[in-house]
Each structure stands twice: as structure tokens, then as C-alpha cells.
Image (cartoon, rainbow, N blue to C red):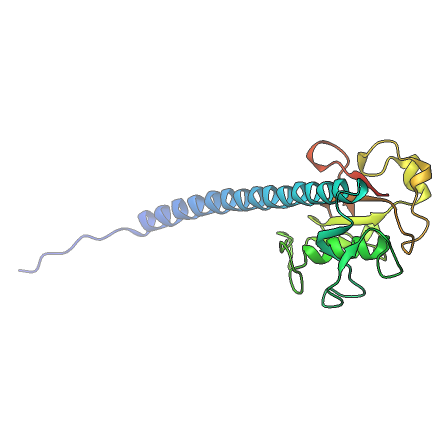
Length: 205
């Protein structure tokens, strides 16, 4: 005599599927929150590293401890250009403020860079950029933006960096020295202005 094997009913299977769906939904949300948090930590840590790097280089150059930067090379239009190190004294057309800022960008470049490669955790682009020709509105989230200071930045306290000395406004990138600002994009087209996202003003004397 055959014995019938009892299986799961349709209702029981539907309940199990529903439970699995709920658990999967909760897990996906938690995972996305974790990855977003990790991206933010990496991006901000890179931002702080860039500011410390610039600080160190400027202390050495502005106080004539070094007349040639041991880290920053003087680049032209792309990071695969010249390999000469930035010379602070005496300066020439090949060693001006623009070449210095471009050299910082190239130090952190992901493709042709020669230092620490910082990739933006939020997209496939290099995280550090010298935004000579890029508007704030075009910034992508997570971007570390290096830019010349203009007259409007003095009154606006751009990036929360506080008062900016109008005498240090960089009238042209071709000048031997001047002020520039480094900011962090907390969202597309938005520069941070407080806390760990605050911008910082630097001066190459």
C-alpha cells in the first residue's frame, strides 16, 4: 500500500517567499547605507590628506626651506607632460602658480599621476582637480576642487573658509604666486562649508 508523502502547502510556500523578500529588502537597504558611509569616509579622508600635503609643501617653499619642490612637478596641459619639478626660486614662465596647481592635481591623478592616485569613490573620475575652467555647478559629489580665488570669493567666504585677504587675490594663473582655495563637493554642484567639509585657503608666496 502506498503512503502519501506530505509536502508544503501553497500558503506555506508563499509565507516563506514573503519572509525571504522582507529580509532581502532590509539587507539591501542596510548594505547600501554601509557602502555610502564607506565612500564618504574614504572621500573625506582623501580631502584631509590633500590639504595636509599642500600645507607641507607651502611651508617648505614659502619659508625657503626648499627652493625646489620634492613632490610637485611642473605640468602643462596634461599630466603626461613635462617632468621637471616645480622650482620656487627663481621662478620662470615654466614655474608659475598655474603650473604649481596643475602639478598638485597631477600628483593625485589616477591615469598619468606620479604620486598618490585618488579616485573619486562616487564615480570613475580622478578625485582631485584643478578647476581653472570648471564652474562650481559642474562639480561632482566627492570632488576635491583646487581653484584660484577671485574677487567674489572675498565677500562670499567661499567654502566657509572665512575672510580672504583681497591683496592675495590671484588675478591670473600665470602669476608667480597668489592665493587659491581647496574645497570638497558634498553633492553635485555643492561645495561644503562647515565641519569636516570646510574649504581652506592657501597662498603661494
